Length: 117
Image 1 (spheres, rainbow, N blue to C red):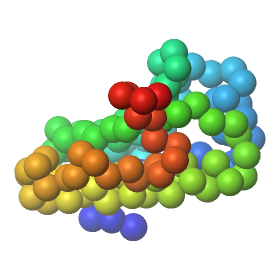
Image 2 (image 1 turned 180 degrees about the horizontal axis):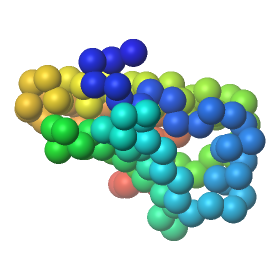
Image 3 (image 1 turned 90 degrees about the horizontal axis):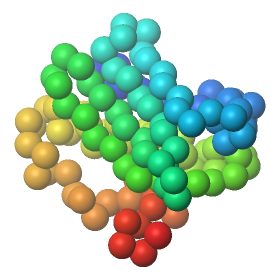
């Protein structure tokens, strides 16, 4: 748990990730207090994951390689969500985006490299 009730887990089941993979172009979820929204959107050859915290007006995101809904990818993606929530928490606390490394890859090999695909 973090100080701002940021979303640390996007997919709650493999069925949910399969539904997104097969049928949906966008999926959004909110925390219980509706102060944080996480979204995953398909954008051609990559996906965009965005985590927004409304009280602070801050957000952070990552480009994601499209991935098959395997158990391994399910865990990798949710681990990346947790790491991105930690990064957003640091950004909110410090009010300084420069503290967040733009070279970090919270989603490891699921991160889409805009230079190399």
